[in-house]
Image (tube, rainbow, N blue to C red; front, side):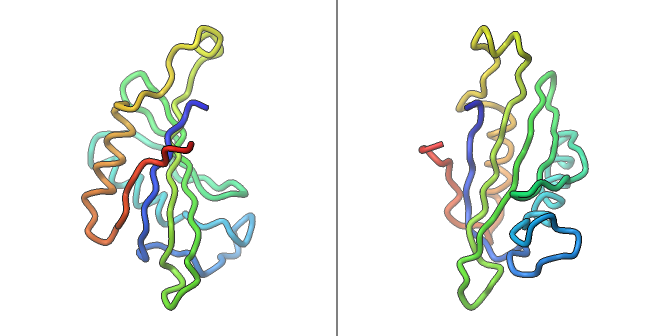
Length: 136
């Protein structure tokens, strides 16, 4: 797959209150996607308004000539703070059909979008355990 996964833990975003407009009752991530959109804009990265899927939320982002889908979802630890849990941001680099056929344009470990998002996450004192998921 042409994606990298970034994971972290925090209690800063909603993981407990289901909104009427959620497609599924586990469709959390709207507030994280909006927060990320603003943080990316601060760094000159253009992105779409957050959109919803049945698994969570997403942004479409562009950096230079490269386009990305940033998928956001989370799971509560179900402890005292119902909003504390693990969040996952999947960074998918878009490829043309020709790039896919030729095996070109894949996301690299040092991809600028991936590094920007990781820097944003690591800069937040209330985010812990920021890491890339090696199994994905």
